[in-house]
Length: 224
Image (cartoon, one colour):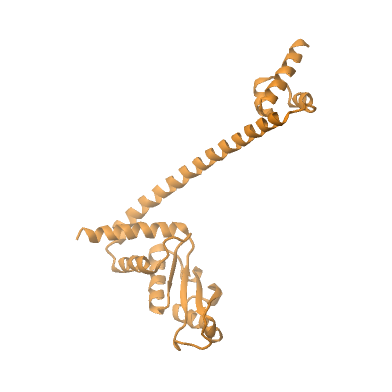
């Protein structure tokens, strides 16, 4: 009985120092229900409550740090694997003129800071070439590729989505909602303009691989 009284006193003292229930139970061999009954009516002062909060916040912060470090290690490992794969593929594909053209085109017109692979242009032949490149080197089927048209409001009635669909052989159902760019003009300034089309692969892995290939191609030409 005396031992139980001593344990209760220790539990109260530890709680007042800001220890959590879990930390107290790790040191005292009592049931959680027993500990709860001992501490249920414990009147904590303002400073004691602050100490408990600091301990809880500290444990949460440490847990977040460990989780973030673990995720960072996983991302780093994936990045290293992707880089090795891109290097192996570049040795095989780097001599293909179409491969080099596609990498150079993306270098000029592709997005480098988005969350995925995005390429935009108003030239139907350039878009067709990039779609062919994607099919051949990224192994993505054309009928699964999403695209989006960017165009000014005065062209809205011309159904330019249908024009683009026929030129690049991407079904209309793959067209995401058209973005109408703001303009002060009420009439068409360029009668033959059909808007700018963006290819949306949206996969970060494709972007990272393209950037690796881009750097490798640059190094190849620096050596010449």
